[in-house]
Length: 223
Image (cartoon, rainbow, N blue to C red; front, side, top):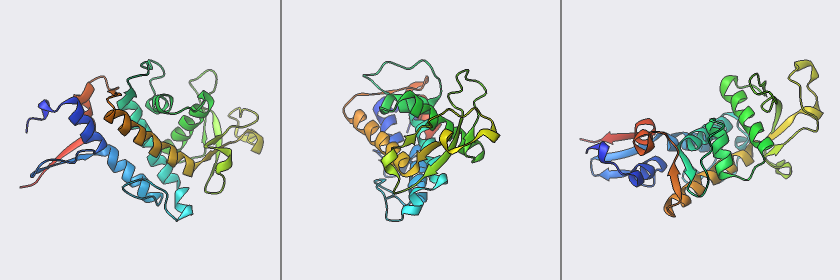
């Protein structure tokens, strides 16, 4: 098969794993679905649907949350709705994903991006913003699990933390509910699938569908 002839729709189908077989000898696998399934497994969700499982402790897994935040990174780098103007700034893909596919406030989005930096960089519960003049990404976190959903995905502090470790208090902590974060990402994935089926999805990558194939899709051949 000449992969240069893969169409835009085929590339998206392969990436989202809506089509898993090209022919009897060629199977398609996507790194997006790999990280999605890993996040589901660690958080005790159904591997096919992403629905919550009965093990409530697993739903609050930090490792699983890190996986879901990685899913957001890839989705934000890859897609946007046709009905939405292209976001030129910021270039951060996780923020694009949350702006394109959720109704979260800018402050909530900034907090989730800060959690992503904290978890992915060194698995910590604080992030100090050294680049943004408004300190939008400076947060110290508490994460919550099942039973604390009433506060929503993000509970912002009453007072902004100044980044000084000696000044961390309950009143300036940001609380993220990890089960709801998983639900949010699962919902974004399903929204993207539905937008594609409705012909309302565009590829965000500068290299278009060819870059999508090159970055995230593997073709497995069987003899």
